[in-house]
Image (cartoon, rainbow, N blue to C red; front, side, top):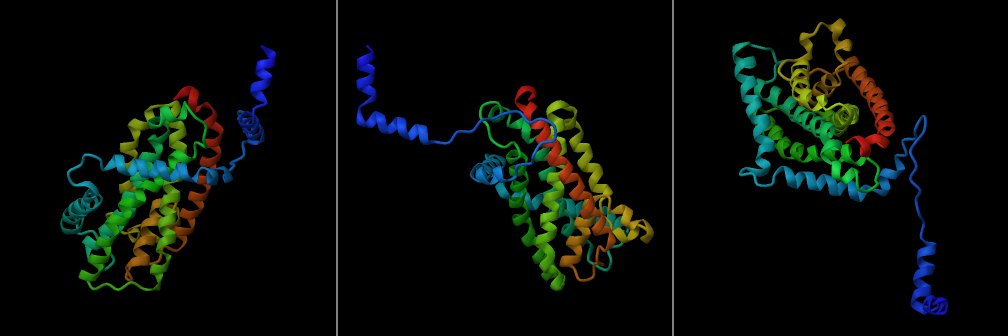
Length: 295
């Protein structure tokens, strides 16, 4: 019996396979202890999985829908109509000399990106339960893919902003070059809050039930239907503690020449987002070792 095994192992094809397997690197997965390393370089090695999950979410979202991607325009467009009727016409809310439909829609486009990314990233870990319990990969990929998915809706809805600017004869200034930075700021804000809520959602399923209320309350606490200039100047930096206040006013300033610059309020919003994002990354990494057991 032993001689037959040795003879099989000495065959050329078997020897090459054994040698190839011995040369392959292997990874030992151990639970983290104490303060964890973010190990963000690991995300680069799993970049294909990140884009695959984002593409999967895009296809699932518009699967078996009659209007398909048109919902990305209809949602902010219908919201703009409601705000225009009740806030612009009835309540006579000022809009800094900007036609109110354009004033509202310019804010609703980044808000839709933020609201969708926040909701999906907060539920992402729980919704990917089967994937998490079967294989190893950096769990940060899951909420990050959910945030990237919202970019599709943004790119579909944004051309209507350009069309409305042409209709109202509004020409942007050089400030429009800063628009990609405000887009990145929007995604960072959604990811920052989403990391905290997604990790908490694994432990406490109450998070899922409070998301709708949180998004609605946050919208009215942000300058979507009204300008931030209604807030007294001395309180405006404090208003920047709401990161979306800086995002929305930044979008208006970058696109509409009559909109005032965010100023100190934007600086406060950026600082708050950075603190929440860094804290969220460490908290998510610290809690992810329990995801497979609890989820």
